[in-house]
Length: 139
Image (cartoon, rainbow, N blue to C red; front, side, top):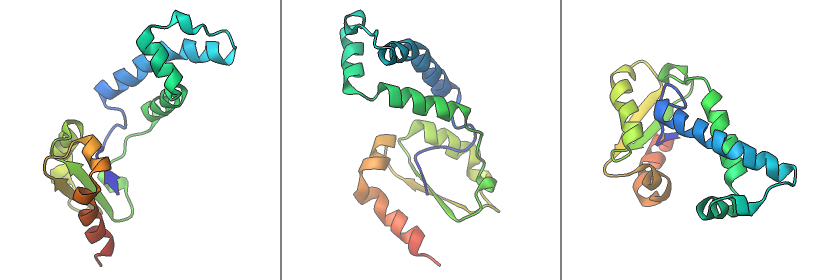
C-alpha cells in the first residue's frame, strides 16, 4: 500500500528544496553536537526547542536519504498495490492528476478518500481502514 505520497521523484522540487535547506541549516549543529561543542545559547529559542525535542538528526538524515531515492513509476511495482490518497492532500493529488490515466496495465489501484489531508491519511483510521481491508481481502 502507498498512502498519501505520489509517484515519480521521491522528492519533487518543493520538497527537495525544503529537505536540502533543512540539511544545510542543521548539519553544522549536528556536527557540533557530535563534537560536544554545541552551545544551545547560539540557537534561536525556536531552533533550541526543536533541537531539544530530539528529532532533528533523524529528520535531517531521513529527508537527506529521500532526496537521493530514485523515482518510482506505477509499472515498477510488481505486486498489487493500493494507492490511497486523500483529496485534500494537495501534493499527492498533483501526482494523482499526472498518473491517473497511466495506471492501466499496472498493478496499482487508486482509491481517493474525500476530504483527507496527508495527516488525516495517517491518523483517521476509520476513514482509510475500510478501503485497506477491502483491497487486502479481494481475490
